[in-house]
Length: 256
Ligand code: NAD
Image (cartoon, rainbow, N blue to C red; front, side, top):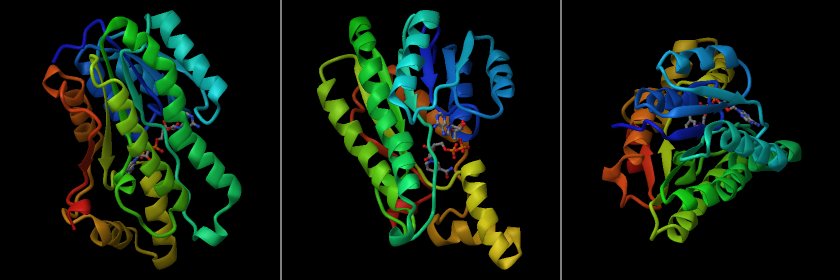
């Protein structure tokens, strides 16, 4: 596939799934606007090595005004956002009656409201150019629940709903909007949950196996590269009539 001349903005692309998706889009020739914290220079270098134009904006996507600055940066430096991948996300695990209110607010802001703000701000440019792809990285937790993840599950179900509305509102245009629903992917976000289990029972390998065995029948992690390949397909002409989908890639998790 050839995405030369297109610009992709991937939120939360300094790590994990977002970086995997950014690299796949860059391999197909898209210029990249990266976003996120932490290993910024390493992410910039990895994307640059694909031979495309790349920039980074440090917006905290929990803050609407910073998302506006991120979209403005992409428009000024790159001429607009053709492909928007709403990927940034955080997790917190606690029973609902003990769930810290501040963590609830942060997860709703970063995992859900950011998708609304980035979408509403990127859409006018996509409509002007008559083409666009919006890919929201939801989760199996946009389709089913799990204990101790009240805010995350609520936010991801919200992302799946928002995806359908945006798909309907753009249905007669060259813009599509879809969600991807990954199962377990071994990224820092999940490593934290494995570490917490290992701290309780002392064996990291058993913690890793049990985490998979509880939910993911394949007993294998999904990889960022596989999620990048699915994103690339959703950006293709072949996917033009895939609209409003919540596409699981989950080793069988939601087939149960
Ligand atoms: P990760 O922790 O490896 O990466 C998260 C990225 O988001 C990083 O680049 C981080 O800097 C960035 N980020 C965090 N808060 C931010 C903020 N306020 N503003 C801007 N950037 C911010 O996580 P991951 O596992 O790669 O998760 C990426 C997405 O995939 C999330 O939306 C997550 O919910 C979803 N997801 C992950 C899994 C999994 O098993 N890892 C499964 C399903 C869905």
